[in-house]
Image (tube, rainbow, N blue to C red):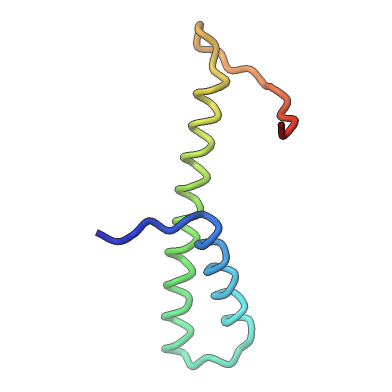
Length: 75
């Protein structure tokens, strides 16, 4: 089983893939590999963000099922 990549690592890998693709220095085959890697990293980021969003919603859900907003002050 592969180790789970953190959001931060996946984001850095995605940014690296974008930089490589934007450089225009890759062959078509290299660009396809880098693009594929970038898509996987973007999916990892999306899944991580969805998981966190669900956790936040669960924490903010009232007993009656209604969601409420709460200011986060960072402390």
